[in-house]
Length: 383
Image 1 (cartoon, helix red, strand yellow):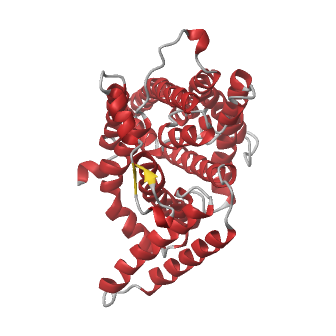
Image 2: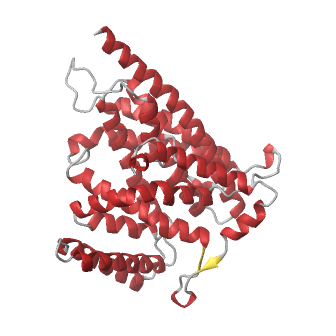
Image 3: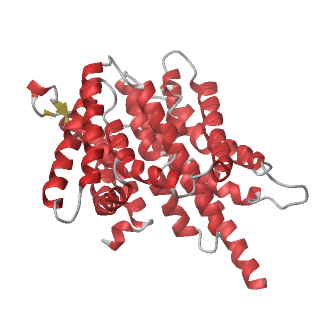
């Protein structure tokens, strides 16, 4: 279990699962696997007759977002984002990591057919980013890691808002109201749990959480938002305990399965001229847009609250590694790729853009992180 809670190993699992999905989809039996992923199961009478890929993206990923929301709740109350003074600098840097990639994407793929993909390159995958940092960042000061973590968390908030606002369809307010009511019941139950009644309360919480998920899904809001709401309202110590218990399953099962299903894409047998602009927009916006946006805005953020003659909290050389890590979009970007486009061909090419763009960012991040960590280790030896 310790291995699955580490920061390095889950990143390898995620990358391996995506590579396996892409490989399987392009083998001679790839069409059969892709067709299998579209097999529909579930109770049709309840409106929950979904394909396997939708169950993975809508239900399993909601568990991942539950863990993200629990972490958000903690960081906003006790952690790195619990005051304006702490949050302002990474928030400014994160704004650059959203605005510039969107601008780059629209510059390349702003046509009527592909403009809807602009949210895709705005995400940062915390698991990957921390994995690369753990692997290559020995010697980096804590302040760099804290800056990156706050940056990635704010990026997650932006991604969650995009999913909730942009991809809600045909809202059913009755179902939404019932979903919110279920979330409130879940919050109350989490505050009632004790050692004496946990055998009853915990199973009841799980049932109510599933009911909330179903109502949110049927309301037209993307079902992963149910995980976010449940993670934000749960009693904090209860949420941290649940997150800890779920972490190995999220790292070893949920995210790799999602990565595998998302990467089940047949590489288009077309000339370069026929490839969708969405692929090129994402491919450039993730590594280049994130690098420029976070570095530029992060550098500007260091002037906020800084007294004359005082050294900046972070130098540009410290921000560059965090900016490169920010370009590893992966999990949330893959989800956004599937949500943004109605045309499955364009969505598939967007997925390839996410995989390639994230891979380029991963390589750049490894180089920048290793170089900066090396300079800190040398300085420590000299000192």
